[in-house]
Image 1 (cartoon, rainbow, N blue to C red):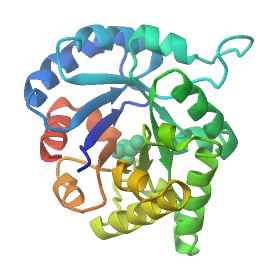
Image 2 (tube, rainbow, N blue to C red):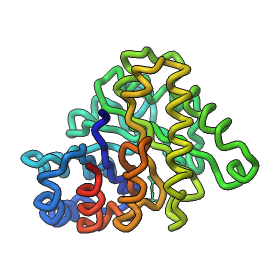
Image 3 (cartoon, rainbow, N blue to C red):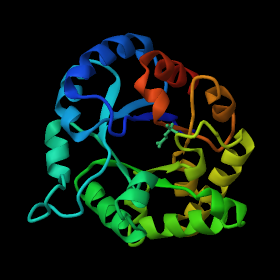
Image 4 (tube, helix red, strand yellow):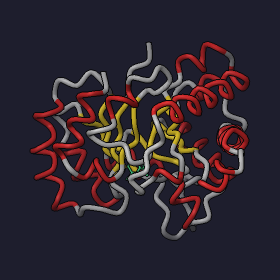
Amino acid sequence: MRKPIIAGNWKMNKTASECAEFVSKLAPQVKDATCDVVLCVPFTDIATMSALTEKTNIKVGAQNVAWADSGAFTGEISAAMLKEAGAEYVIIGHSERRQYFGETDKSVNMRLVQALKNGLKPIVCVGETLDEREGGKTELVNKTQVEGAFSGISAEDAAKVVIAYEPVWAIGTGRTATDEQANETIGYIRSVVKLLYGKKIADGMRIQYGGSMNAKNVAGLMAQTEIDGGLIGGASLKPDDFAIIVNTAK
Ligand code: PGA
């Protein structure tokens, strides 16, 4: 049995002073959740959020992590900095990072190594663009991204990773993958993990769906056998909607 994990990805939204009201609305609504509840917030919100959520079942995550311990890497944030600020999870390789900030399978792999080395729980994002899907390349693209991300990672470490399957064409577009499309591709990703690490790790790995997941479509997606939760952008900014998503993920 895989425990579902619902993670909000706030992207570049909300300042630290906006966190308290959000937590006061969300926390009582999700206190009995049977899934893992995570909020991946901007770097500058992490310390505030971790203090605000200390006595709740809400965990805090970052949206990126540097691949080096420390040094001359202007603008980067290290794993040690994230941990000290209170982050437990970290998103790695989000398609917006790949698209706008030059993230590659290689840099995703280096960041994943660093997160694991420092005991952060990684959420690794993969997913195809619309052109790739329409060109029949969905499986190839996801396989390449998974193999790239996990290059050189031991089975023991791989077992600690959550994968988020996020078709790029579904992110922020309101155009969700159908339940069947999401289930099928996640099943395929699990088969890739199985080739890399064997059945036990593949069966245990939590693979989320992400891309316009919301309070209305969560039930259909979560009813699919392969889908172990969601990475939620827009709908995670609204506490009531996010609470519905969390409480539907049983
Ligand atoms: P969305 O974003 O839910 O707004 O589509 C999901 C994501 O990018 O993680």
